[in-house]
Image (cartoon, rainbow, N blue to C red):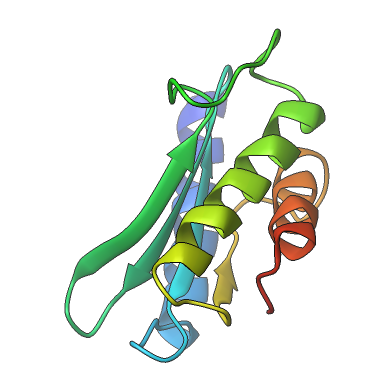
Length: 120
């Protein structure tokens, strides 16, 4: 099997196993994180209703950053997401790292969301 296909398969398995136990409700929605090579995306999702409550990414026009694929940018995305979620009345979330390791950009996004006022 190709090395990249094997990596993708492992990532998908980690993501699927995490989603077995994590679920977002109206009281405590799920904060889902996705990181690509150049950008970071985050959403606050109510899984029972199937609605996205708030979202933020490095591609948003409100986020002004030099580089988009680093920890500083991820931290700003976390702060922006927390600001949007708090405006909608969401204070507590369940963190879904999306099969990514909790370090680097994923950790920076979580710390930014905590600084912005979200609890998880």
